[in-house]
Image (cartoon, one colour):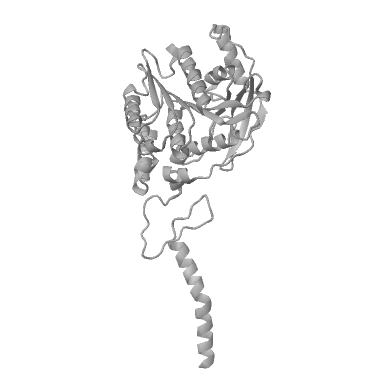
Length: 358
């Protein structure tokens, strides 16, 4: 009998921790795929929204994030940009314009992934601490995309006027590593890519880390606003026809209701909103965090972004005491093609003015 009791006691001692280990892992469904660290809950606690892996991208967590610098590497030439420049020269669009700045294809890292881009270096950059402009492109199709797409022409003009410019391609484009297969994570991770790039350019010995600005177009405008909110830094920012329609409406308004792909996007957002509070991922709920001066250009003939959106944004930010200005260009399209020279000149004046007082 004593022997039986002893064996039973040993079995209980061995089995108990195994049981609790297996039981806790079976019920712990909130294990981040980005980390081996588990999120533990007491039995009395209910699992609430925003504990899934996408929670790292909500604005409250972006604000807490420690942005990380990496080395910016020169990875060669921007051959397709060179060809695009030659095309403009042949058309007579660059009469009197110099190409005395240097252009490099570059790469850096964000969240352990390589992101490619383009850097313009103005004349005499080695002998000066130059201001730098982070260039954020709008929507692009992966087919036919090349390093510097969507930003190179504005970047060239800024470089002619003494600014270092750094454009990023984002994950899945150019020579970058692949983006997330989750369509919402691929969207949400973009502000992180920009914030890490900003930290990286601060380490360049020819850059004045106190004079960093942002130039963005279209969807890049929403990314830029996200960065301004999450960092709370004074990065003078120019937005061309920005997508300021809040998430998720900004996505839903841009898709075709009839296509199978659009239906999948709608379903993805519906599933997302069952688990997460979408308000925590939308720029319109965090305008008070912005500290940067902003200049917005918007064309009246833009079929993608509306003058009314920009007017509403400006009204809200001015109500919060923010430094913001709206330039409405009559007869201009989404790329402000009809007033391009005028608009880029306004940008140069804006950056020069703000960098003098920083």
